[in-house]
Length: 168
Image (cartoon, rainbow, N blue to C red; front, side, top):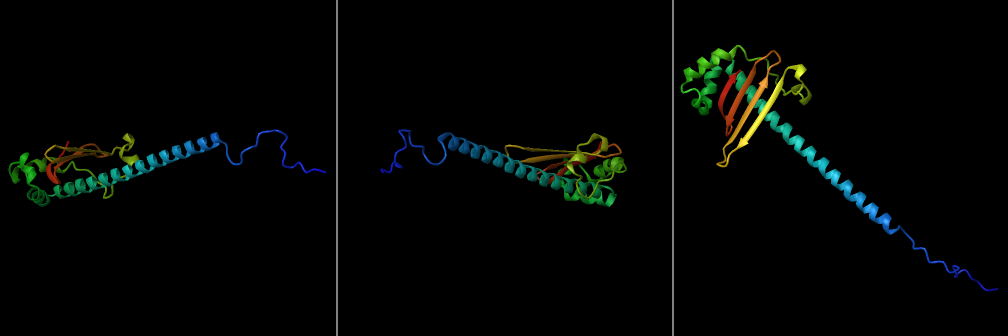
């Protein structure tokens, strides 16, 4: 008897492994997965950088406001920040202006509230941070914090030096 196990009956030989379309689909799936992972990672890094910037702005705003609560602190604040001379030519002018709004400085938490609290109009508080860099390298930052009880503290800085502080 003859062994015919080598004969497949004239049918084409089936290749072993995955088909071409399976390989193409798998490759496309990996590319899409890497794209979304990269986007998610980049978004996370941008979110962290933004929260760090907000925390830094919060600390600067709070420190300036706490100093302005007393006459001695306001005097020290003026002397430490020569940029205030633009809006207040003398220390007496700054003390007079700060005395007018000092009582309206509301409670400023030590730690920046979470983003949900800051942007919820029902909870009262709100934080606005605006940053502009000019072609000459000058960086201007404006921080505005709305107190829960009303009023708004505005702090303006240029190159990390305070140029204005007021309560509206």
